[in-house]
Length: 113
Length: 113
Image 1 (cartoon, each protein chain N blue to C red):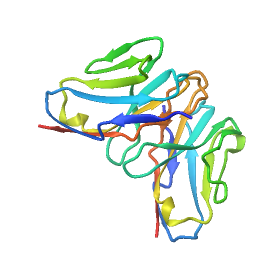
Image 2: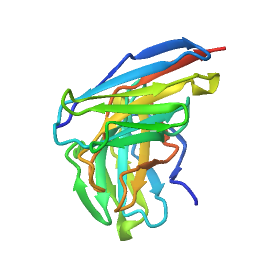
Image 3: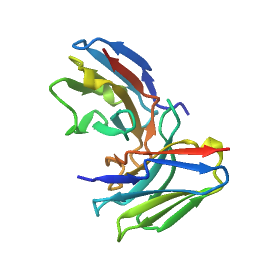
Image 4: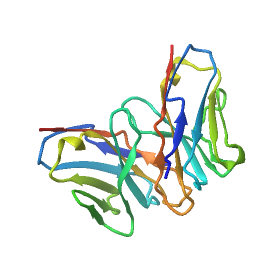
């Protein structure tokens, strides 16, 4: 089955800095890669996703890049704000509407004012 | 649009007792997922339903866990008997047939004493 590794486990930045979280996956058939944000005690919420037919996707301060050859993808947050503090999970799946997501173990991002 | 609803939000029981969790997915979402989330970890799939059919229950510990999704809408996850190691957050999610985005409920935090 799929295995997703996520690094780092914790990341501390100053407000305004950029943050990068990296994930690798093992199943070459995976073609859907979402990122979820989970604030303390709350539900995971999708913040951005990418499919394997594109290499990069941006949404305001958030971007995701995908390297299919190397089987890794990354989340980039620019101009970080204290409200970005949360746990971020990457995931991978084969991308059909029925498929199972395999999640990484998460990265706790702390943005200090 | 109402989100995924779960109840109860919190449950404390003694070991060897039974416990049940309920999930109501987003209206029109045919695919329903139950995940287990341990502290500091990403969600791990327990079971996935497509309508009434359990299509992936390979990670469900069937000796003590059971689930049902009667009429292809609401779902119940049961543990009997509960063990100390079952303490975790149980998340329900749903998705439509045509998309990959999974919408999560708030979860049920189970504590087994």
